[in-house]
Image 1: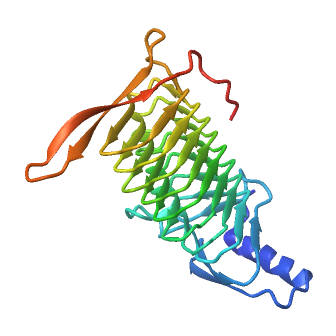
Image 2: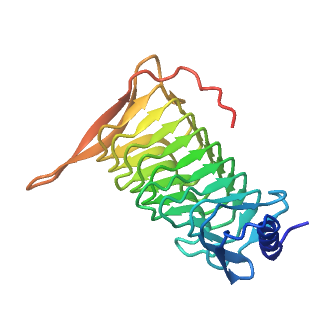
Image 3: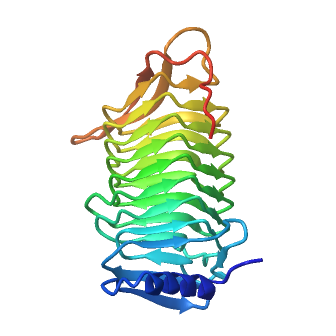
Length: 289
């Protein structure tokens, strides 16, 4: 039996009143009968569903399903589905400085973007953990949002990228299963610098890890298995590839990651370039996700 958004909000308000926290104030704007914005709060808001498979927030294909524009919000234990199909419409969208939002243990499916981490500029410190993110156009999209942690999620069967960062720095993408996505498993672009990609299973995607004009990222101990293009970079410098498992590696040699760099001048040149994983793993890591 599903729990409606109205009942969910009533439970949240009842929790606040029962706790007698008179200094606790917040605004929740209901945009449609099944879509809402958490707009402003001076305390932590915990939105916890009873059962993620039966506690459903259904956007009915209208706008974002849940939009978080306040810090210190936790969303846990829901199925969140059916945003509208605009280019940046999402199941969950965050929009706040130093947001400290926690998105934990949800099913996020059938949206245009599953989770949209947007415009924090400073460190947003959002945690995305233990979610099933599937059957969206795009899994996770981070835009100008820094110092986020994406950990222990299953990100699968999305039409385009599993995870895409644009101008998003100092993030950690750790121990996720990223499989069967129509685009790239992980796509860093537009100065998404100083991110760590570690202990992920990246399998059967159109591309494994693609880095475009993003620098000083650390890619370590991942399983890259049977992606159409395991890894590629374009005009990306000082990225380090260490001890990853590559299913197409032959022999005991280093693994070469092919790409291009631009040399600017009167006549810009596009030059083939190579990065190396100097000590690739000989067997896949045992990663339970």
